[in-house]
Image (cartoon, rainbow, N blue to C red; front, top):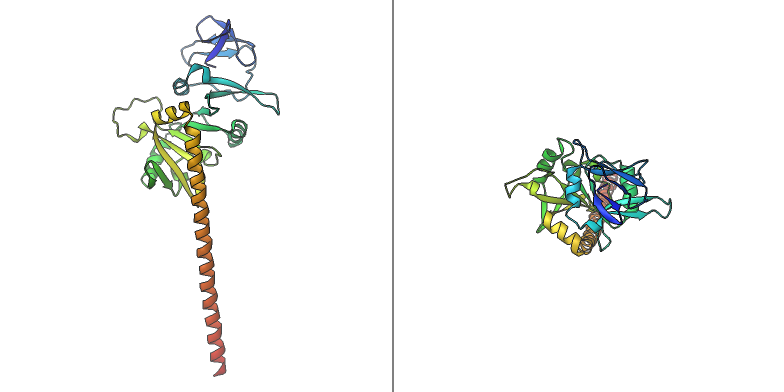
Length: 269
């Protein structure tokens, strides 16, 4: 946990300090060792069952947003539990940062709970992740500026994220400093949950563009409009496929009918 409350103010962890958890008001202590990022920890069990150790990558991403939007406690009306959104903007968008492995069931549960959300996930968790993406990126088909179709998303992105019901943004740079402005790792790659046929849709955007859109409230309308366009295109694609299937069925039936007529003619002789 990045912040805890001392005298009603949100304070970062510092050696020797004690504070209260902003969500459950239980005592927390500052953990300021040399192996993990400085953080607050509950004296007893953490109040959020989804809590995970935080990395420098995680903290750096959160710090793109105002302090008052970070670590927002949200109640679960069904279970009474509280869960901490990494970031919840003033416009109601939840941004969750995930670098470690996440079980598909828990991922789905979080998406159902937060609903209006977007994932930002580290694309460098496994050594194979970025090389695989580079190989698949060569087969991107541009739809319009910054938007691409991907025929085989499983050849580009970790399979654990392909079933997500919300947009997933892949960050392949991690904490690395990259001086080449043309390096693909400088961009973010947003995989949308809807498909056009079997093709996935990926938007390529800069970090600044994403952060600005999330902060000023433009992300959800933009993503929603793009999702609607994908749905429309998917419907048109499905109509085209069904039309082709009907045409093929008619052609096959005509061939069968001609063959049967030919056989009847030959029997006469």
